[in-house]
Image (cartoon, rainbow, N blue to C red):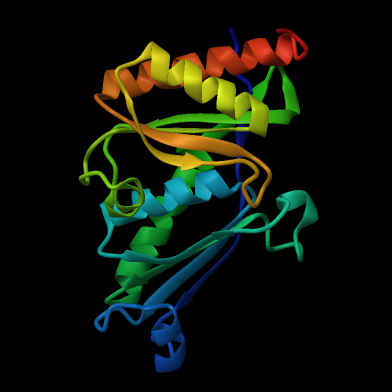
Length: 217
């Protein structure tokens, strides 16, 4: 089966070399991390994945990450998309390195998939072989452990998560109950890399089947 990939787009990127103390305080930046890197993307889950990758490749921390309500089609402006992420680091160079890692993830490595060729009906069945500091903290696992990052529309997500858990020796560590800010649902599962891949494959196959026969008992 051919997979039709849906890549996100980085809409805006900026570096603040030395953030004002008041702003840094509101963002709860570490005392030695006053350089900020900000970006917006058209797909939120790809943005979260990109932030995690940044923490693996640069000396940066995620100080802010947020999805926007209703998604990119209802964004507040042309550069908003459906997600904003902010990295903090000890220097502009470290922040730029983090942003470059995030941008590569957004543009090349992480993507949604069109369900049965319909780009208006999409899912995220992405396996992270080794987590960084951000998603490992969100999932309450150790950095370096694998994750299956599973997202889909509400009903599809619930059925798909059930199938994923039954198909693989994977553990549900984070549950995104629907509706999320972008009206999706999903979960983070952990286990061995092969288990996470098996879970993602089962999630994908289940959702493809739902797309083919939506009304079925």
